[in-house]
Length: 220
Image (tube, rainbow, N blue to C red):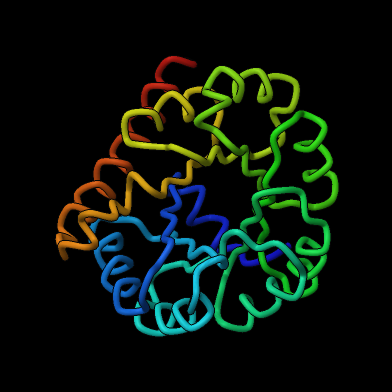
C-alpha cells in the first residue's frame, strides 16, 4: 500500500536527507543542494515553523524530489502534511494514528521504534519501513541483532548518521539510512555554502553504494 515510487526511490538510493529548516528560502536552497548531490528523498521535520508551506513549495519547485514529512506526532499533522504534498511520513515513535491516516491516503509511513517489541508492533500494524531510533546510541551491532530474527522488516536507522557511519549500518542490514545534522551543516547554511551540503550528499550516497556492493560480494 502507498506511493510505490516513493518506496522504490528510498530503497534504490538507500538514503533520506533530513532538513530542519529556519526559513523557507533556506529550505529551497538546501533541498536544491541535496538534489544536486544526487539525493532524491528529502524529509522536512514538522516541528519546524513553516514546514507545511515548505513541503508544498519544495514539492512544486523540485518535482523530481520525493518530499516527505518527519517528526509527525499525530494523525492531524499527518493529514496536513499529505495534503501539502508529502509523499511519505516519518515518526520518531510508534504512532498508530499516523499510520491509520497514512493508510487512508495511500502514503508510505516509516514508523519510529527502538525495542524489538516496538519494531515488530510497528511492522505488524502496517508500517512500510521501521525507523530505528536513536541509531547513534544503539549502533550497527544492535541493528544486526534485530535484523537476525526479523529479516522481513525493512529497517532505517536514524540519528547521528554520517558518511563514515552509514556503511556499517548498511552492512548490518539497513535498507536505507536517514541523515540530518551532519548532512545539512548549520554553519554551512548560515554562510550560504550550499556546495558543502551538495558534497556531503554525494559522500553519503557513495558510502551507501560501496557498502551495498561490499555486502553483495561478501554474500556470494
